Amino acid sequence: MKLPDKEEAMEAIETIVRYIEQCGSDLREGLENTPERVVQSYEEIFSGYSDDASEILDSTFNAEGYDGIVLLRDMEFHSTCEHHLQPFSGKGHIAYIPVDRIVGISKLARLLDMHSKRLQNQERITQSVADDIVENLSPLGCAVILEAQHGCMKCRGVRKQNSIMTTSAMRGVFFDKQEARTEVLQLIRSGNLHG
Image (cartoon, rainbow, N blue to C red; front, side):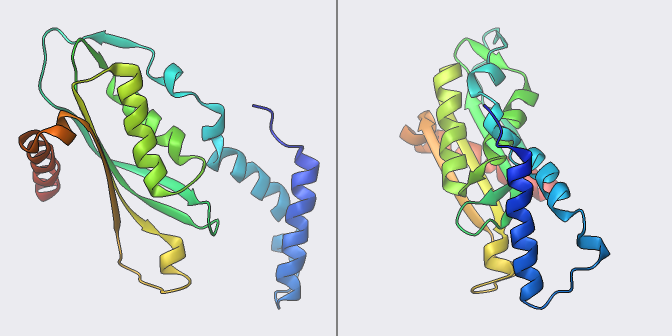
């Protein structure tokens, strides 16, 4: 993916800084290099656009007959709301039941990061992670649950400081079978009780 021209990006950010100045802020020394720093930070914050799920999940291992739940829980994630350009962050829990192949656990974290490091909404991240796991690993089931606090809820609008939004995507047996769904939810909750 070709990144936008840095000079054009800095000019746009300089316009924003001038707008803030007109709203009452003094253009002081600390703001002199802000456009350049913002561009550099955006390259990291939105680095997920240059990644591909099939490449992240391309290295798998023989499951050796393992047919239980694989759960990676309490992964922190940080994203940016596409509606207000405000940050949101929280914890992600990803579970799947392998058929023949398993994937290294760091790949699950990288997949969550890939989707988070884009302009997003929480619902899309949740569904996209689940869809990628189903498409690339063909598991018996997949469950993705995200819990996050949103800047657009905390610092503007309704200003609810402690609200947490939870989203879930259930695929395969986690969608079809209540007992599988209950088991994965209990595993996530029991981990949170001891953590």
